[in-house]
Figure 1 (cartoon, rainbow, N blue to C red):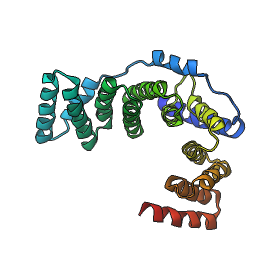
Figure 2: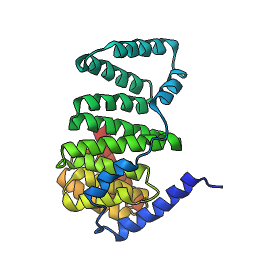
Figure 3: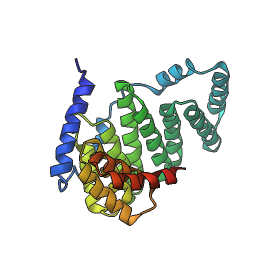
Figure 4: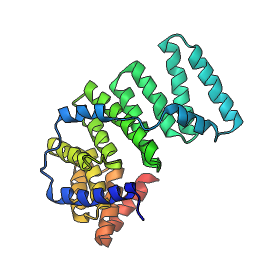
Length: 263
């Protein structure tokens, strides 16, 4: 029997096909609704719980190193002293394979610096953790934190579409039950506003591949390729799209380019 999370994922995939195929001109919720999403975020876990779990799974040497950094952080009196310690803790947990905790310390850095870059790093790190986690409770926690981080980055620089794309991708990774198409609607709106943005086109192409819309994926990815022909992500996605659509010669051509790019 499928669990609730699996049912939601299936329904989201079906809806995504319909919106990508029929709804390319649909207008997503306006910015006011996006900002209101902050008030809907409910924490489903606590960073201290994740820290204790991580410490139970790392070596005594690693535990000792983390403990020293925590003591230094607790004893620090100024932000100028805290920041390098927080950076080391974020890097340490990422190195150990705990991107959720790396994101937590990146968030604490962003709260001090309050720059677009710092909030974008925090959101991206939480997003990486979201991609790797299969626990529904932790995924909910990571989604909320990533959304808040990217919304903070957007508020500091509304003209940078990259943070808006990354926010949309958080919603496609873990669709809200009350609005499962929020992420794709945001991406489609961004595509209308920035039709030549390769990052947006690549992500729309990737989502089209995931939902079996290979010709639609090829159309968007070929547009991205014409704009930036040396983009490795575009080239490798085109190889996959053409292969899936049955265009073997084209697939081989782009696959050869893809292999050269990643070597």
